[in-house]
Image 1 (tube, rainbow, N blue to C red):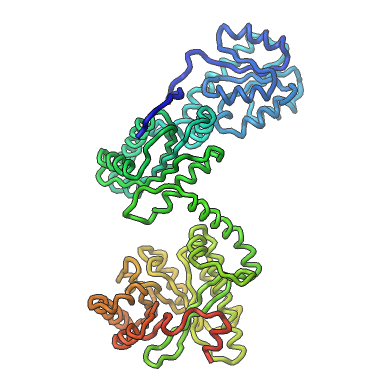
Image 2 (image 1 turned 180 degrees about the vertical axis):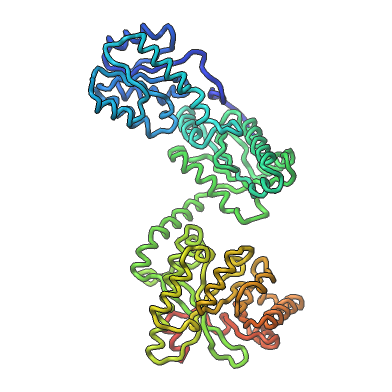
Length: 562
């Protein structure tokens, strides 16, 4: 892959300098010279005349330094400020600091201890005390070993995430004229590997990948970014084409400790070096997320369009609170028709986001996003209350109430107190439970014993339950038999197949099965007269879809009700 190289010497894991190095930060020239002349026999001594210079040297030599001797009273940057700024960096804060002071102030000592100083040396200096305390600190907190533990992952020996951030920043500065590239790797189903093969084999997989990536990117940096994630940064002229990456990843999988090792790769070529390292890494994982649910592709490349999508997502998240406050989220209603008499017998509420200028934010732009970040729980409840209040208004006008179903997301199902809050909302609005039903997707109810208690509590409270999207995923007959659904909604993907013989047979058997279990059947996404006729022949109960009506805003739905 690499066409040329220019080595940058980096300290290897476990490697220590031959002679302990000490940084003396002291503004008094005479004191610096005295300390230096006395300590240089036993240590390598680096001198800094103020805190600002000391921090710069600490950042450049932190891997070699054993102790910092720090004066408190200095111009430019005093000892207190030095300690504060040092504490902001996890790597720099591992280097022990001994404070040198001529003050007897206990407050100053306490403040230094609070800021992370490990010991004090009084002025004027007693050099036996100075050496004794330096040696004690080195013995108690062997900085090289401590730093190695912080820098290097205990299992694989490669850099930790925090160390990678620091070294990558240094490398970018050292090779500012180079083109940098980032490759991130995410092992798929690593928990399954541990459960199937055992933790020992799982560890072998991680060590194998760490060794492989380190050998591959010898001139760059390799980090264990997460429990089952790796980040590799390199520079120069590399061939990272899809064809080359495929060959490389296939070779890695073939030589792995287990068969069929699946890894997703994100590639960010020619990185924007002005960005923080964390953002650069995020872009690599952004590429992986674009193929997260795609079983056919294991390699993805970061594009600017991905970044624009992420910025759009962040903007939608930031707008959520104001959209709730301004009631920009509204319920649209898609009627459900009795297939025999072709009259409205109910509706499904669907959330829509209407901007202040009348434009609409597409549901596909915000619903999946809010499902990922948890905001969907509040949105679910907001729409549920909206529908309940709508039904109350119809009831107060003396209009017949038809059941309107409300979708409950997977996140809401697992959120504490949802059933109690929904029951309270129904009671507050004074409507019958029968006029607002709950739709749960089939996939959200699979293989979870907690769902049984949740659904039983809803039914016991008085709600009718609809199984939504049946046939869109891994359909489970056990779910139908064990959970208290009274209505089954056949997904559009199955309805679209009823024009074919096999598809028609599948839908027919689903209807027969549901009726046998005492369930009502609704077909979703019905768009043609042919589909309506076939479903009528199959004795499907109700139909929902564009053939009869698209989702309607409130006023249009009321008019349609007559």
